[in-house]
Image (cartoon, rainbow, N blue to C red):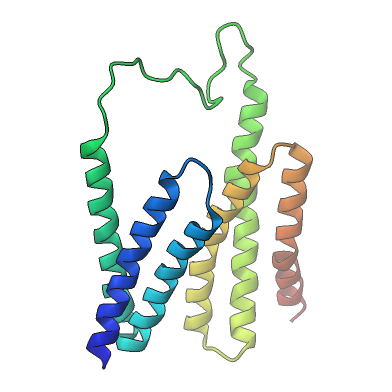
Length: 191
């Protein structure tokens, strides 16, 4: 029974890659095909877990990744070669000729993303540690939870801050994210 579930999990994950490739090749976005592709991945995870736990999920994921690799290799090999010049579109990383560098704005953005978001993520890690310790886990487990939360929170905060176009929204996002850390520090000092 578990071997059949594992085979079904791998097939589901592989079909998920195929469905997503088909969805992304369409001229317009297709929510149905995108949902089908991600749903097949989710089904592969569930079937793999029921079959053999984390090992089954890992095996199903390997089938999905192998199918994606084959699909992408085929797409790369069959793509037409062009003699067109590469696109000259810019991501806004450097100014066009004659435009001001706006170094002050760039440095402030860097400091917000690197320093402020890091400090806020440390606060979130402290809040996670306090929550895990409060739930009855040992000190080692609470420390591991905080070590897990800090880089993850920093990454997500950096991404979210960089996606905001206005400085006020960036500060608002950081301020809201700092609340759990501030509460954790106040409770820790008071205890």
